[in-house]
Length: 111
Length: 116
Image (cartoon, rainbow over all chains, first blue to last red; front, side, top):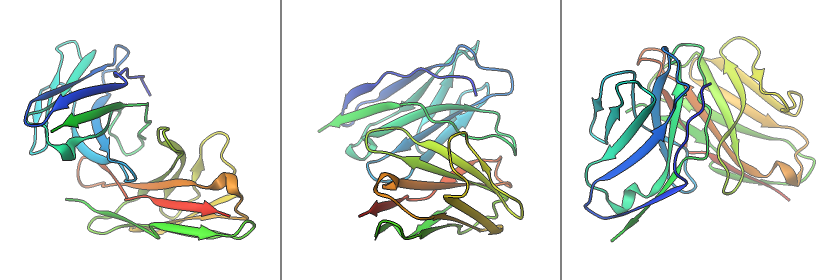
């Protein structure tokens, strides 16, 4: 699986937007960009995924660069419950693909 | 949304005994499930890929005779830690691929294993 690079940690204030970056310069044409987050002592939670176009769902938005070498997960209004480790993962999204986790970004949200 | 359930959520066992952890996909069928291990303040490490009706595929360095995986149905996979030792104490997490939802993978809540 192609490697991703994320900042170790980021801080935000409650109610403010958060932009979590991810670099994946070696992404291949068939790799989807997946985002998961993990709260303390819980399993990872699916957030969003995309291939080329920007994606929106009830949890977040995913902005994908035109060359696909980077992407940004956008939380429109951070809440305290959004404090978690966010993982950006590349995967082929086929029936044979796996998810390989890096270190992720620990998001700290202050009241 | 899709739900994956693990049981037990935590277990304490004596050194030398075996313990089984169950992983169930509650509202979808999953031909493929995955088992991860996570030590404190570290990321998830894939242990094995479990395929319904066939043998699991283990990652390099994971002992298949110690971590027995059975995936007997499309909604259930089990991980048995045999002859557990204190160094096996960890957070074990399963995930399941929803074959009908764009192959999205969903994770269970995790199971804490403490070997004393």
